[in-house]
Image 1: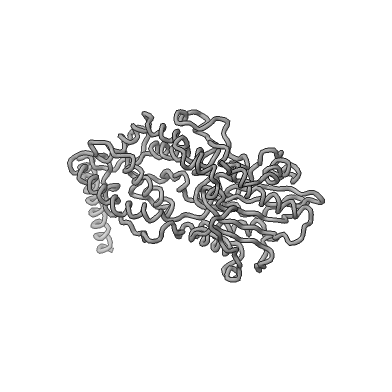
Image 2: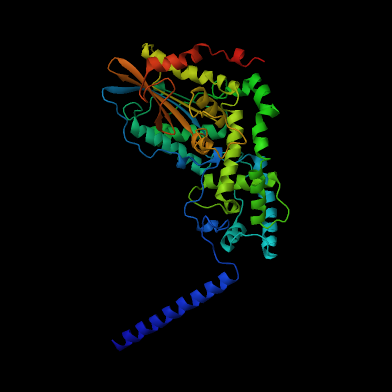
Length: 466
């Protein structure tokens, strides 16, 4: 007992000594200005490493897990039975292109060295932990795997497939039968891999080996219609006016102040160039998409306000290149509208040979144009370089982080309710109400009144003629 008591006294003494030593060390460290600073609204600088809920919205480079609907309960409507499932998805999270990866791999270490030198000379405001994380950072991605799907992308598509299987088990039945489904993807590794992983989620790994996919084509007038649309290329893609709002935004006081703030935070006496800021942002956004639950050391260079500004800049670009900024953007999306409308119409009219599942895998440019043609996520105010801080833009519908993240998807399901047919549209696995419909379970007649004219007048050669 005496021995045991002596041990307890020794442990108590050591504990008190350790606590006192730690407190003194932390106090000395803080006196030298090196203590970690928690995120707070009254201080512009903080340790990114300490943030429990970092900003995760990076426009079109946002990870899908922040948009997914975890509710996978079977979808039932009284007296109704799902008849046809139509699905269009963007590919999952991917690598940057090879050219961008080479730049990130070669140029970011040079920037990092300069940031370290700045802090050694007493400039810059990154905390020690954030600097340590930057110094531990390595670029691990294989630069030859240009725009390849990554592990997170595989998980995204597999999860979407599994959840839709749970929601519609009586429609998306197992085992898989080729005559019951149409599966198509564009001529790219990332869409092919996305299709394969989605199929595994819906039908299981064993059945996935028996699936037949349509052979991709280049050009693809259905899944990449804009690649062949000369009018869009001339009026939008090659038109400097199409990026004018984005360019004007880059010249605003708040954008220039953001660049100065980032430069000061990193200790640069001269402001960084926009090209350098873009590299930092690209690495931050891709790493947060690749590993959503882990921090990216490069995100430490941005405040949350900075990230919101960069996000708005990208939204301006996509609004005018793919959205409501130009009429041709969404008018050319009619082949997709025609495909889903006519398939539903054939089923309603009892035309034989219609599959019960149609799965398409494409790209950001397709998804955004289709969303605009459907009339979804349209703000009453036009996006401008000058109205970011307005109430409507703060709560804007056209926010690509939410409507065009990696693995963004649109599903339309045809239901038969007694003798009538209805359509429900899902975006990011959640029901949305289409324009012209009174409910998310929309009578097919109402659906056809709105979108039938787009289908019947879909002459892409005429629409895209200059």
